[in-house]
Structure formats: structure tokens, C-alpha cells
Length: 77
Image (cartoon, rainbow, N blue to C red; front, side, top):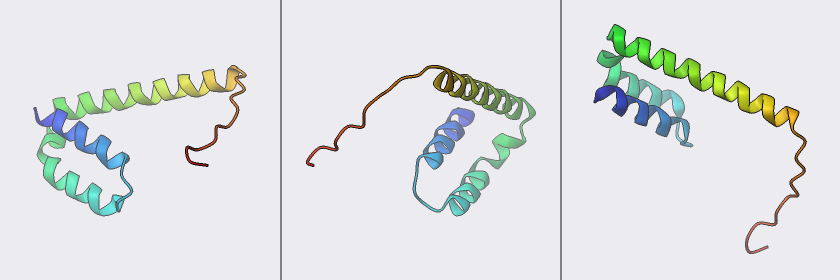
């Protein structure tokens, strides 16, 4: 399914150290047709909204719960 392919590429793009401008342009060229589909665009927009909401909840929990985790030494040090 093209929407899932787009989601995977978009996730990979966010996890990379490569040039985001060039990579974003490539993804938009590759999946431009999918993004123009109103149903697909609505789905992806809703998914993005849910992700932002979950991130706000996680941030709130992290700020509200005092957890003291000592820094760990990196292996080999």
C-alpha cells in the first residue's frame, strides 16, 4: 500500500543524518500522487495529530514524574 510505503520512508527520513532537504524533496516526488489523494492525506494528517498528542502526553508525564536515573558509563570506558 503506497500510504504505508510513504510512512516508512518518512520515518526513515526522520531517523537519518543525511541532508533532509534533498531527501524530503525526493520523498515528495516519489509520493506526491499519494499525498494528493484526499483520503490518504486526511489519514496521514490524523495520524500525525495522534502522534503529536501522544508526544505531549509523554512530555507531560516526564515532567510530572520525578525519576532519578544516574548516567551510565558507555561500554569500553
